[in-house]
Amino acid sequence: MRIALLGGTGDIAEGLVLRWSKAGHEIFIGSRSDEKAKGIAAEYIEKLKVHGIEPRIHGMPNADAAKHAEVVIISIPPEHAAATVSQIRDSFTDQVVVTPVVSMKREGKTFLFNPPAQGSSALEIKAALPETAKLVSAYHNLPAKELSEIDKTLDYDVVICGDDDGAKEIVKKLTEDMPNLRVLDAGSLEVSSMIESMTPLIVNLNVRYKPQHFSVKFV
Amino acid sequence: MRIALLGGTGDIAEGLVLRWSKAGHEIFIGSRSDEKAKGIAAEYIEKLKVHGIEPRIHGMPNADAAKHAEVVIISIPPEHAAATVSQIRDSFTDQVVVTPVVSMKREGKTFLFNPPAQGSSALEIKAALPETAKLVSAYHNLPAKELSEIDKTLDYDVVICGDDDGAKEIVKKLTEDMPNLRVLDAGSLEVSSMIESMTPLIVNLNVRYKPQHFSVKFV
Image 1 (cartoon, rainbow over the protein chains, first blue to last red):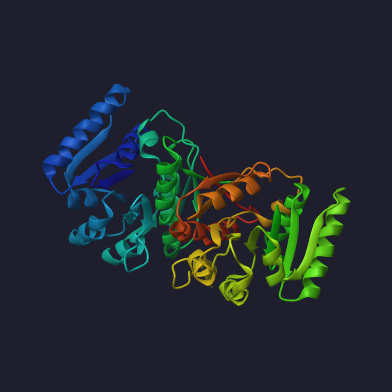
Image 2 (tube, helix red, strand yellow):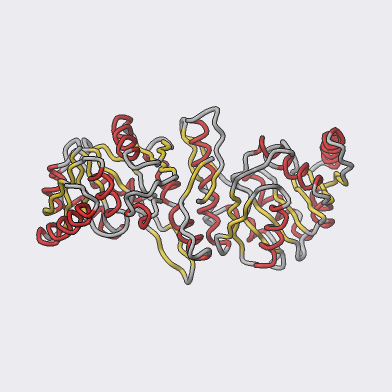
């Protein structure tokens, strides 16, 4: 598939780009700056060549990346995510849009869930998108480091939610391209706050049980 | 230890009573009605005798059960939990108090986290307790049915939080009396909302993936 990663640097973006490239997908890295996007794309291409993979990865401004793609991952920090989507609103038609965005605040050593007024980052981003776009909330709790080690098997669960079953099916298939991730569908987009709030909980556990890096499995 | 279960019927109370009795603890079942509490206690004693266990289980009004105990489990529905604690406030001194309380609401087929004004049931109950009581938030996501099958090994994580390290250590030891539960300490009581909100998420998964009954493990 043609997959865009807006703000395609850092955190889970690298692992997703590398693993989806390995699975044969075409990737569009979006950034505010065309130059930065092309630079990141070149870095990912180099990393994949080391693994003997000849990827199709392109760098371009966010709006163009979104237009080229069937699936758009909003890999943007929470304070900018909805505003960025709003700025390039005209680039979205009926794509599947995926939000892994979680808004947290820190009080002393404690991380707390700090959702926007809508109740979750997913609902905030939904309000910024045209109604034709199909938003799925997913990938909040993937361990970034292990995700970027592309030969490593990931025995974790990815809990997703969204209002469009077809879009969730596409996200499920893309997720299963990354062995052995399992998708669990928790229902409508409204439940995203309960998925998002697991992230600060896991961050608190990671701080307390360092160097352990937790992800979640439902058993 | 001397453990009280206020509102000791239903859900996880049965499993906790049976397993802690098996581990040799003395149990005080509390209820609004002395007669009801004694009836429940008699039922639990019968169930344990089948397993060859001679338990020490007593039924009595909530206030008396709390006074007898070193550890008090608030096994009361969310709409009554804080009010019940408030009514018997004088029964609490420096006990360890454990809240597994989660407030949810249902919209159609979807369960949503529906915390009280304080942000979590734990913080609501803390406000109802005297300051000397040591509140720990725990046991929100134990699968009730498996918990009550006392010979069954439970390979799950129990995420706890609270402001008193000694109290959390006691809850950790009591939890480890139930093989193979593992306790993960997520920090101060303030993080309880993030633990509590996992419950409606898991309920939604259980509804969608019936007959699977999920609990959680951090890996």
